[in-house]
Image 1: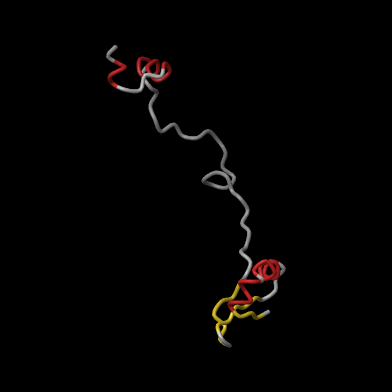
Image 2 (image 1 turned 60 degrees about the vertical axis):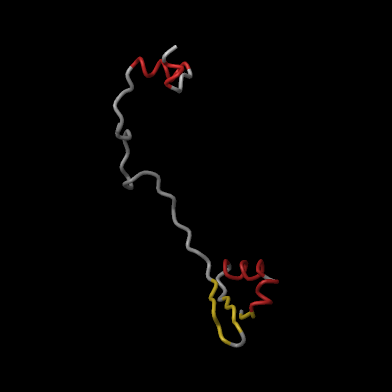
Length: 84
Protein backbone atom coordinates (compact mmCIF):
# COMPACT_ATOMS: atom_id res chain seq x y z
CA UNK A 1 0.00 0.00 0.00
CA UNK A 2 1.30 3.46 -0.83
CA UNK A 3 -0.17 6.63 0.67
CA UNK A 4 0.72 10.29 0.51
CA UNK A 5 1.50 12.08 3.78
CA UNK A 6 -1.97 13.63 4.16
CA UNK A 7 -3.77 10.31 3.59
CA UNK A 8 -1.36 8.54 5.97
CA UNK A 9 -2.22 11.00 8.75
CA UNK A 10 -5.92 10.39 8.23
CA UNK A 11 -5.58 6.57 8.10
CA UNK A 12 -2.82 5.84 10.59
CA UNK A 13 -4.75 3.02 12.30
CA UNK A 14 -5.31 1.32 8.95
CA UNK A 15 -1.61 1.61 8.09
CA UNK A 16 -0.67 0.23 11.50
CA UNK A 17 -2.96 -2.77 11.10
CA UNK A 18 -1.62 -3.44 7.60
CA UNK A 19 2.00 -3.35 8.76
CA UNK A 20 1.24 -5.67 11.68
CA UNK A 21 -0.47 -8.05 9.25
CA UNK A 22 2.72 -8.14 7.16
CA UNK A 23 1.73 -5.82 4.33
CA UNK A 24 4.28 -3.41 2.87
CA UNK A 25 3.19 0.12 3.78
CA UNK A 26 4.84 3.09 2.07
CA UNK A 27 4.33 6.79 2.69
CA UNK A 28 5.28 9.03 -0.23
CA UNK A 29 5.86 12.74 -0.59
CA UNK A 30 4.65 13.62 -4.07
CA UNK A 31 5.36 10.43 -6.05
CA UNK A 32 8.63 9.72 -4.20
CA UNK A 33 8.51 7.04 -1.44
CA UNK A 34 10.07 8.40 1.76
CA UNK A 35 8.96 6.04 4.55
CA UNK A 36 8.45 2.29 4.81
CA UNK A 37 6.36 1.19 7.78
CA UNK A 38 7.19 -2.26 9.07
CA UNK A 39 6.10 -4.06 12.22
CA UNK A 40 8.71 -4.36 14.96
CA UNK A 41 9.87 -7.85 15.82
CA UNK A 42 8.80 -8.93 19.28
CA UNK A 43 11.56 -10.20 21.49
CA UNK A 44 11.17 -12.77 24.21
CA UNK A 45 11.57 -11.20 27.63
CA UNK A 46 14.62 -12.55 29.42
CA UNK A 47 14.86 -11.88 33.13
CA UNK A 48 18.35 -12.02 34.54
CA UNK A 49 21.78 -11.24 33.23
CA UNK A 50 22.61 -14.63 31.79
CA UNK A 51 20.02 -16.91 30.25
CA UNK A 52 19.58 -20.11 32.23
CA UNK A 53 21.57 -18.88 35.23
CA UNK A 54 19.69 -18.83 38.50
CA UNK A 55 20.68 -17.99 42.00
CA UNK A 56 20.71 -15.24 44.57
CA UNK A 57 21.59 -11.73 43.50
CA UNK A 58 24.99 -10.52 44.71
CA UNK A 59 25.01 -8.36 47.85
CA UNK A 60 26.73 -5.14 46.80
CA UNK A 61 26.17 -3.16 49.99
CA UNK A 62 27.51 -4.00 53.43
CA UNK A 63 24.96 -4.35 56.24
CA UNK A 64 23.80 -1.08 57.83
CA UNK A 65 25.03 -0.49 61.39
CA UNK A 66 22.30 -1.01 64.02
CA UNK A 67 22.32 2.62 65.21
CA UNK A 68 21.82 3.89 61.63
CA UNK A 69 19.10 1.30 61.05
CA UNK A 70 17.27 2.48 64.20
CA UNK A 71 17.45 6.11 63.03
CA UNK A 72 16.13 5.15 59.61
CA UNK A 73 13.41 2.96 61.10
CA UNK A 74 12.26 5.72 63.48
CA UNK A 75 12.00 8.23 60.62
CA UNK A 76 14.89 10.44 61.65
CA UNK A 77 16.16 11.83 58.37
CA UNK A 78 18.05 15.02 59.17
CA UNK A 79 21.10 15.86 61.34
CA UNK A 80 18.97 18.30 63.39
CA UNK A 81 16.60 15.50 64.46
CA UNK A 82 19.50 13.15 65.23
CA UNK A 83 20.93 15.54 67.83
CA UNK A 84 17.74 15.63 69.93
